[in-house]
Length: 102
Image 1 (cartoon, helix red, strand yellow):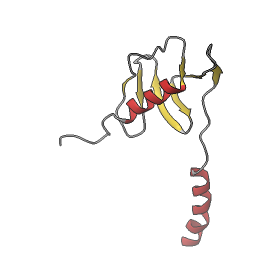
Image 2 (cartoon, helix red, strand yellow):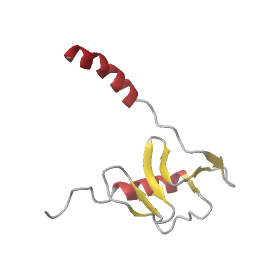
Image 3 (cartoon, helix red, strand yellow):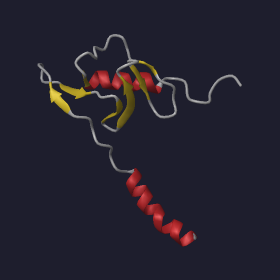
């Protein structure tokens, strides 16, 4: 049994080290990269969060969903790299699941 675990460990470590695929993107008017947001999982530069267009919320794993920053225009479904990073930071600063009064 331990031999099987020892042989699977390197494969699991290699799989965990793989980069996650990025969302589709386009070039904006000023030459800046714009990232397409979709409902569900969104990733860019190994930063991932779940997005809900209905609630206009973002969530990272293990944290509660929070509202996306108000200054980010999400109507066309694209955000700049800086806006994506701001959304990720906002989601990452949310309270963790299971934290609080008991």
